[in-house]
Image (cartoon, rainbow, N blue to C red; front, side, top):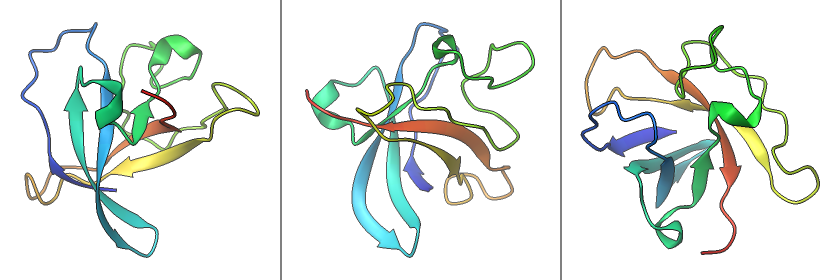
Length: 108
């Protein structure tokens, strides 16, 4: 997914992140905005935090990884969890892509 905007963060480990879809799509690529600590109704997909047992890095401390992720379902049979590539090239040319696991947002 191509990021069109992202929040300024202070590195607070308690922050939650989600994606708000902008409606733009090209093949399998979607455009979105990365939100921090947003209300549920603003989110189209939630970024799965490492405390859900997914290995985002060897220390389990990073939300955004440098390598593709094996995204096991967070809630098997109830929500779709899938790997995603965050493309920062529109925001900062030359920035490397980051890898996350997204869970389809359901409810408020």
